[in-house]
Length: 465
Image 1 (tube, rainbow, N blue to C red):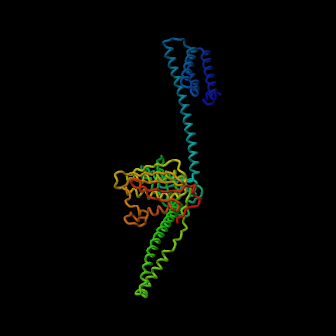
Image 2 (image 1 turned 60 degrees about the vertical axis):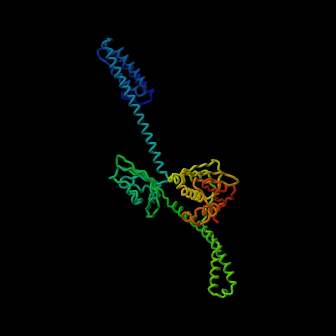
Image 3 (image 1 turned 90 degrees about the vertical axis):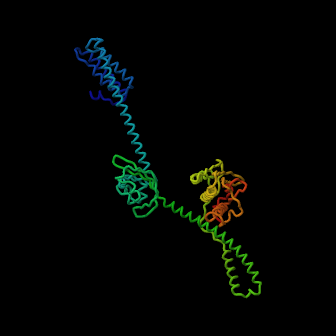
């Protein structure tokens, strides 16, 4: 009964009622009991209780009230010389006990809130880790796996929870060398691509984002692992498609030139055949057969390969923002500033985004070479829509082009590398109903990329001719 009365737990109203009851009991006992017995110290229990529910100023008033009761019902007569110091010490003791109780209560509530918040954060983090589609691993020095989510189990082909306790060197050997027990001061925040191995010894290409951190039990390494083998295959297949398409264009151009040469040789052969001296010459007849065979070979149409560039409806404004991410750092390496004047209301276009990006990258490379010796290095990219087409202008402050007659011809003299960049770029754009042309009226060097609006297409995928 007595312990239940002195408990500090319960609702504020119940605690206040118990404290008031104790104050009343102490005051009555102090008033009834005669003799030199001092009961003022018993008010400490009441002030200790109200300290858990009152604010500091309320605790001070309660201590002052208990001090007054002690002086009023105490066994000693009031003497200012002795009563004031005694009452001051009692008030300070009562207030200190109440404030101590209040501070303990506040700190206890703070700790409880932190524990609850930490528990909720841990639950959310655990849920995030277990439901993440990315494999998440936590390892200690030496490579022993401490935490592995369900995605990691699926990635490495083990049963649920089968990664715990195993060494990461069995699955990703490169990670085992990152963290050692002897080297605890180095901190890593980086990514890498490396080989991974599944439980059944299948190999895959892994993209690993990892970081290291220290704990009381030693260094730890956290890693996010993704299988990018499919992305690698897609890039390889798309690169092959681009190679085949470019090769097909080049072969077609070469065949066209060979046909022209064969036609000229055939005319000369017919003229020489009219001569009586060469009409029965066997070598001359063999030469005619060779010319005819070469003309037949050059006349064969280049068959279209099965690989196609998948044209699609794309948001051009969003695409140019993505292109800016690629082109701005590339130009910044050479000290070139790029100004983008792209309106926000550009229409959607029908194009293969990879081909269009290759065209813009090729034009930027040409401008970069042209601006190497210029004092003012600037490239400006603008876009506008007109008559069912979107015109993307790429202009630089270079010296310009002196002769533009053979600008888009392949394998021309004086060109950098193979001289096929502009030729293939225009061929790519024309395959989707667009075009690439040079604007001789603009200052410096300016190319215009013409892209058809999506509304003017019938939805069929573009195919290189």
